[in-house]
Image (cartoon, rainbow, N blue to C red; front, side):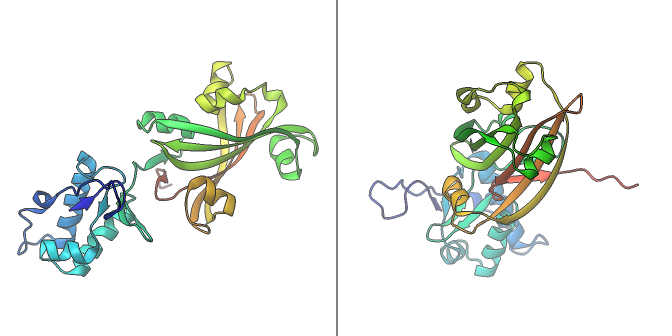
Length: 263
């Protein structure tokens, strides 16, 4: 059984959603491990929408008693789905189904385009949109002299109503004017394509770190939480740098994928 909406006992809480039938027929004597069977059935319930985003599972003890299984078995099943980004454990809330995780290949695409292709209903809030002098790092990345003006834009990108990433991009003024309102409706790369500018190649570095207090507020996560990071400089087909960016992502909602080929 799971609960959805507000916490159990809160006024106006949604009634429990029974998933007892999901676990019917678990083979307790076969070769397939019990934790795997539980995890597989939970995954099917999530994929089918029976367990919607935000739904909360019963705690491990209650679920183990309901299914007549050991708590370590339930813990291992839940951890498997946590590791795959389908469930998340939140202090004071419990185990919840997360919104669809964005899986981004390492081909040259934008987050906005990725969210659209996965049906994640992207939305953007522009936090900063200012012309500033380029510091040494930004100037070097964009091929400018230190102090030359660049556009500094900071956006929060939402997927299906939930904040996924904080994106800071520095854009040389020579790349052409950008409209703040348009950036809240469209992706940056999409706006560039509309005026005939194509991002041809990019250098990027992916890492991880603890979020800043400001990022924690924007992403609605606890201070000091781990975030994925991406640093990218992108160029047009003439080799001109069009943007230099520092992005951070919620790891439970986002992942990078790459294909490795032996040489």
